Length: 182
Image (cartoon, rainbow, N blue to C red):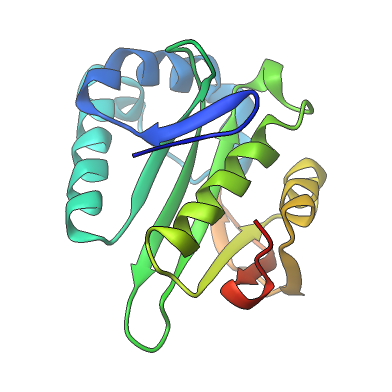
Protein backbone atom coordinates (compact mmCIF):
# COMPACT_ATOMS: atom_id res chain seq x y z
CA UNK A 1 0.00 0.00 0.00
CA UNK A 2 1.31 3.40 -0.99
CA UNK A 3 -0.27 6.86 -1.15
CA UNK A 4 1.35 9.97 -2.62
CA UNK A 5 1.15 13.72 -2.20
CA UNK A 6 3.25 16.38 -3.90
CA UNK A 7 6.34 15.98 -1.71
CA UNK A 8 5.96 12.73 0.22
CA UNK A 9 4.47 9.30 0.13
CA UNK A 10 3.40 6.95 2.86
CA UNK A 11 3.59 3.21 2.64
CA UNK A 12 3.31 0.24 4.92
CA UNK A 13 6.50 -0.31 6.85
CA UNK A 14 8.22 -3.56 5.88
CA UNK A 15 10.89 -5.73 7.49
CA UNK A 16 13.38 -4.34 4.95
CA UNK A 17 12.94 -0.91 6.57
CA UNK A 18 14.59 -2.06 9.80
CA UNK A 19 17.84 -0.11 9.56
CA UNK A 20 16.37 3.14 8.25
CA UNK A 21 13.69 2.99 10.96
CA UNK A 22 16.30 2.38 13.66
CA UNK A 23 18.31 5.35 12.36
CA UNK A 24 15.22 7.61 12.39
CA UNK A 25 14.27 6.57 15.93
CA UNK A 26 17.83 6.95 17.25
CA UNK A 27 18.27 10.41 15.67
CA UNK A 28 15.01 11.64 17.18
CA UNK A 29 15.18 9.97 20.58
CA UNK A 30 15.71 13.14 22.60
CA UNK A 31 13.47 15.28 20.41
CA UNK A 32 10.52 12.89 20.84
CA UNK A 33 11.08 12.06 24.53
CA UNK A 34 8.69 14.79 25.84
CA UNK A 35 5.89 13.52 23.54
CA UNK A 36 6.06 9.73 23.96
CA UNK A 37 5.63 7.07 26.63
CA UNK A 38 8.82 5.95 28.34
CA UNK A 39 10.59 3.27 26.31
CA UNK A 40 13.45 1.02 27.28
CA UNK A 41 16.89 1.26 25.73
CA UNK A 42 16.02 -1.96 23.88
CA UNK A 43 13.54 0.01 21.78
CA UNK A 44 16.50 1.75 20.13
CA UNK A 45 18.20 -1.47 19.02
CA UNK A 46 17.92 -3.70 15.98
CA UNK A 47 15.98 -6.24 18.08
CA UNK A 48 13.61 -3.58 19.40
CA UNK A 49 12.81 -2.16 15.97
CA UNK A 50 12.52 -5.64 14.50
CA UNK A 51 9.90 -6.45 17.13
CA UNK A 52 8.06 -3.22 16.26
CA UNK A 53 8.09 -4.08 12.55
CA UNK A 54 6.78 -7.57 13.27
CA UNK A 55 3.90 -6.01 15.20
CA UNK A 56 3.21 -3.66 12.28
CA UNK A 57 2.94 -6.69 9.98
CA UNK A 58 0.64 -8.58 12.39
CA UNK A 59 -1.59 -5.51 12.82
CA UNK A 60 -1.94 -5.09 9.05
CA UNK A 61 -2.78 -8.78 8.66
CA UNK A 62 -5.40 -8.71 11.42
CA UNK A 63 -6.75 -5.28 10.43
CA UNK A 64 -6.13 -3.95 13.95
CA UNK A 65 -3.67 -1.26 12.85
CA UNK A 66 -1.90 0.30 9.90
CA UNK A 67 1.68 1.50 10.42
CA UNK A 68 3.11 3.69 7.67
CA UNK A 69 6.51 5.14 7.00
CA UNK A 70 6.67 8.69 5.65
CA UNK A 71 9.15 9.00 2.77
CA UNK A 72 10.33 11.88 0.61
CA UNK A 73 9.16 11.34 -2.96
CA UNK A 74 11.76 9.88 -5.27
CA UNK A 75 13.82 8.53 -2.36
CA UNK A 76 13.91 5.74 0.17
CA UNK A 77 14.56 8.34 2.89
CA UNK A 78 12.33 7.60 5.90
CA UNK A 79 11.41 10.93 7.50
CA UNK A 80 8.69 9.88 9.93
CA UNK A 81 5.84 7.61 10.82
CA UNK A 82 2.07 7.85 10.80
CA UNK A 83 -0.04 5.16 12.42
CA UNK A 84 -3.67 4.20 12.55
CA UNK A 85 -3.86 2.13 15.73
CA UNK A 86 -6.44 0.53 18.00
CA UNK A 87 -8.79 -0.21 15.12
CA UNK A 88 -12.16 -1.31 16.46
CA UNK A 89 -14.91 -2.58 14.17
CA UNK A 90 -18.60 -3.05 14.83
CA UNK A 91 -20.58 -0.08 16.06
CA UNK A 92 -17.48 2.09 16.53
CA UNK A 93 -15.56 1.59 13.21
CA UNK A 94 -12.80 3.88 14.47
CA UNK A 95 -9.10 4.15 15.23
CA UNK A 96 -6.52 6.40 16.83
CA UNK A 97 -3.96 8.38 14.87
CA UNK A 98 -0.36 9.01 15.86
CA UNK A 99 2.52 10.54 13.94
CA UNK A 100 5.97 12.07 14.16
CA UNK A 101 8.41 13.65 11.76
CA UNK A 102 12.20 13.85 11.75
CA UNK A 103 13.07 16.92 13.85
CA UNK A 104 14.81 18.98 11.11
CA UNK A 105 11.77 18.61 8.83
CA UNK A 106 9.16 19.90 11.28
CA UNK A 107 7.30 23.06 10.32
CA UNK A 108 7.32 22.43 6.56
CA UNK A 109 3.83 20.95 6.16
CA UNK A 110 5.09 17.42 5.59
CA UNK A 111 3.30 16.00 8.64
CA UNK A 112 0.08 17.61 7.40
CA UNK A 113 0.49 15.82 4.07
CA UNK A 114 1.14 12.50 5.83
CA UNK A 115 -1.84 12.85 8.17
CA UNK A 116 -4.07 13.75 5.22
CA UNK A 117 -2.92 10.62 3.33
CA UNK A 118 -3.38 8.36 6.36
CA UNK A 119 -6.84 9.81 7.02
CA UNK A 120 -7.80 9.22 3.40
CA UNK A 121 -6.62 5.61 3.76
CA UNK A 122 -8.70 5.22 6.94
CA UNK A 123 -11.90 6.23 5.16
CA UNK A 124 -11.36 4.94 1.64
CA UNK A 125 -9.31 1.76 2.11
CA UNK A 126 -9.84 0.67 5.71
CA UNK A 127 -13.55 1.60 5.61
CA UNK A 128 -13.46 3.30 9.00
CA UNK A 129 -15.97 5.88 10.14
CA UNK A 130 -13.94 7.94 12.64
CA UNK A 131 -10.29 8.76 13.32
CA UNK A 132 -9.27 10.39 16.58
CA UNK A 133 -6.01 11.84 17.85
CA UNK A 134 -4.86 12.91 21.30
CA UNK A 135 -2.40 15.79 21.59
CA UNK A 136 -0.87 17.46 24.61
CA UNK A 137 -2.16 21.07 24.72
CA UNK A 138 1.40 22.46 24.57
CA UNK A 139 2.14 20.62 21.30
CA UNK A 140 0.99 23.51 19.12
CA UNK A 141 2.60 22.19 15.92
CA UNK A 142 0.75 18.89 16.15
CA UNK A 143 -2.52 20.66 16.87
CA UNK A 144 -2.05 22.79 13.75
CA UNK A 145 -1.47 19.64 11.67
CA UNK A 146 -4.79 18.17 12.78
CA UNK A 147 -6.69 21.41 12.28
CA UNK A 148 -5.31 21.87 8.74
CA UNK A 149 -6.52 18.38 7.80
CA UNK A 150 -10.00 19.14 9.17
CA UNK A 151 -10.00 17.43 12.56
CA UNK A 152 -12.27 19.08 15.11
CA UNK A 153 -11.59 19.65 18.78
CA UNK A 154 -13.66 17.28 20.96
CA UNK A 155 -12.48 18.14 24.47
CA UNK A 156 -9.68 17.77 26.98
CA UNK A 157 -9.68 14.74 29.29
CA UNK A 158 -7.45 15.10 32.34
CA UNK A 159 -4.58 12.68 32.91
CA UNK A 160 -5.33 10.95 29.60
CA UNK A 161 -2.01 9.34 28.65
CA UNK A 162 1.23 8.62 30.49
CA UNK A 163 3.86 10.52 28.51
CA UNK A 164 7.51 10.54 29.49
CA UNK A 165 6.51 9.09 32.86
CA UNK A 166 3.82 11.68 33.68
CA UNK A 167 0.03 11.43 33.30
CA UNK A 168 -0.76 14.27 30.89
CA UNK A 169 -3.98 16.04 29.89
CA UNK A 170 -4.62 15.79 26.15
CA UNK A 171 -6.76 17.59 23.63
CA UNK A 172 -8.88 15.12 21.67
CA UNK A 173 -9.47 15.76 17.98
CA UNK A 174 -11.46 13.68 15.53
CA UNK A 175 -12.80 13.55 12.03
CA UNK A 176 -15.58 11.38 10.63
CA UNK A 177 -16.31 10.17 7.16
CA UNK A 178 -19.17 12.71 6.95
CA UNK A 179 -16.75 15.60 7.56
CA UNK A 180 -13.92 14.31 5.36
CA UNK A 181 -13.16 16.39 2.31
CA UNK A 182 -10.34 14.68 0.46
